[in-house]
Length: 113
Length: 114
Image 1: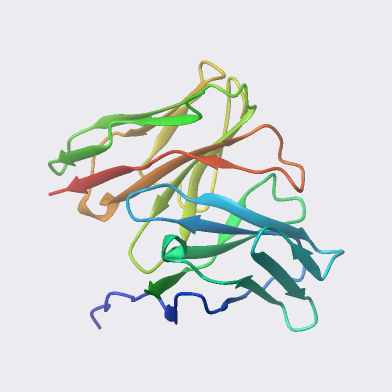
Image 2: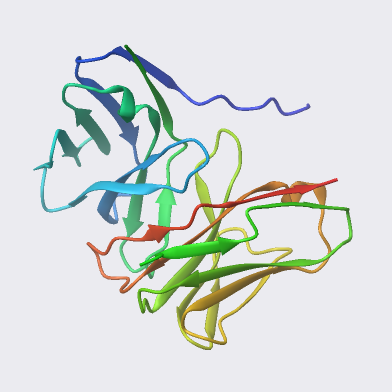
């Protein structure tokens, strides 16, 4: 049948609240994960990364959690601001893939003032 | 420091026409990549290069060719454009493929094939 356009999952949060964006990955051989932020009309921008030998990493207002048991990655943004509104992608690097990042479909974060 | 620069930013092609997208980076990176981004999908790798004079196929290489004659430039060519190639194209570069190396992206080229 005719394919239907896919819509991005959307997360809407109030300014000042914490945001949690989730990502599932499929390949247990993935050894490195990155979160990218993409604002409208711009290229993806690196936010934070984590290696597979870690389960948590913190940056400025952002935390990435990795659960290898269930192949799940999450990005937590503290005190979300209007400038955080964007599409967020997780990407995984599969061991031996020569840097070929596999991107997820993305989640659109909307911050209400 | 401009980072990764893509030209053009927008282009409309007729089916069957050819064009070349240019990516330039001024960070002396060895590795360069071309991705396409379609609505509701993540970025998919078209071709990549691990150094001057070398190229390799990514996930969706059909209908595209690339060249890396100079370290700082990575060209993406469409020999005979098709409507299925309507997409936003992103170039990226990194100094290594080792785990933990950040890739820097350009602003994108929005291509429409009619």
